[in-house]
Length: 77
Length: 77
Image (spheres, rainbow over the protein chains, first blue to last red):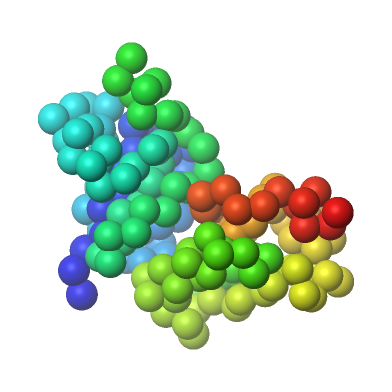
C-alpha cells in the first residue's frame, strides 16, 4: 500500500491530530510534512487539494481535512 | 486495540470519507454509525464531543472532525 501524506503546520491541533493518525494507521503508512517549516511543499499540498491543515492525503488522492487548524492562507501569510 | 467509531449522516461527503477511513484503518477497526438513521445515538455522539459529521472518535476518545459535512444542528433539525 502506498503511503498517505499528513500535512500540518505545527499548531497544537495539528500535533494532536498527528498522534491520532499515527496511532490509527501506523507511522510506516504515513509521511509527515510540516509545511510551516518545509515551505517548498506548500504548492504541492495546494495542488493536491489541501485547503487547510491538518489534512491527510490518502493513497487514492482524496484529501481529508481534519478539524480546522489553520487555512493555507494563514500558513503562507 | 479497541475500535474507533465513525459517525456520519449519509451525506455524499460522509460516504466518501467513510470509504477512505475504512481503507486506511480497516473495517474491523471501526464501527460505522449513521446518526441520520440511528438517531438514538446522536446524544452519545454529542457527549463524545462530536460537533459535525463525518467525525471519527478514536480509541483514545479524541474526536477528529473530517471535512465539513453537516453540523449536529443540521442532523437534528
